[in-house]
Length: 310
Image (cartoon, rainbow, N blue to C red):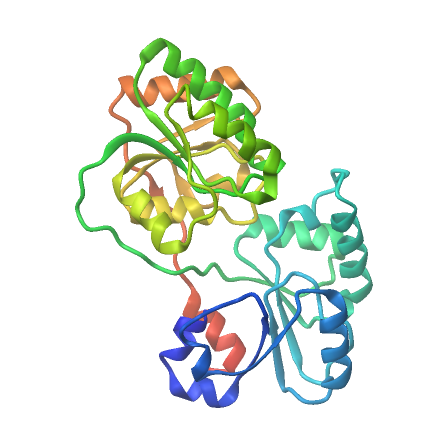
């Protein structure tokens, strides 16, 4: 988003950025901005002090402004955990759901990246909420490279990402066929799994890279024949679009978030380890088709919403 805006000087004159102090970018010096701590108190103080300052407010962080603003507020909503009715063990998730419900009237327009999330927002927080569907993402393309028989899952290690079942299925596949490689990006968000992977890597070709940046992720896409995506819950599934852009074949859960994004190479039941094993077997034995995208990048529409362009 910042990169897109930096390409248009007119946007810079109109925009003030409120940025998490942990964020780093070579473009920041071009922006009028303030860095604040990543906590609710910092945002509370800022919104209270500046509630009459801006004509248009665009928020990325799911939770609406803590105070009613004079300007028009667009809230980009992208966290499925905040709209699902499933009880979550994480108290922070429950608390944030309460905050969203209390503050929902501080938003004029809710933006989701697909119809599934738009419907869930209305079901959870009120059918009277005004929503728009605007998928957007950074477009990257792959130069022709030699693909390896590798399964890449670019995802953090949260429980709903379904890593445990995926890893178990791959190991059972590998014990029989003795081929393939599984590449993961589990970081400190799941230290238990990260530690277990340290031991697993000694016996099997399961490689955990930990947290890696966008350029590093793209390099893995370039050489991976398959992206496997067993997630149980997604707001959008950006990894599927990235996989398509880098000419990877896509093996993905047979869930709604996936069918809104693409026609995959193969789908499977993410709750069935046997089905996951069969997905690995099919990748080895069959000449699976390449996936086909069902959405397009609408970043221009999003920018037109923010900057009142026609």
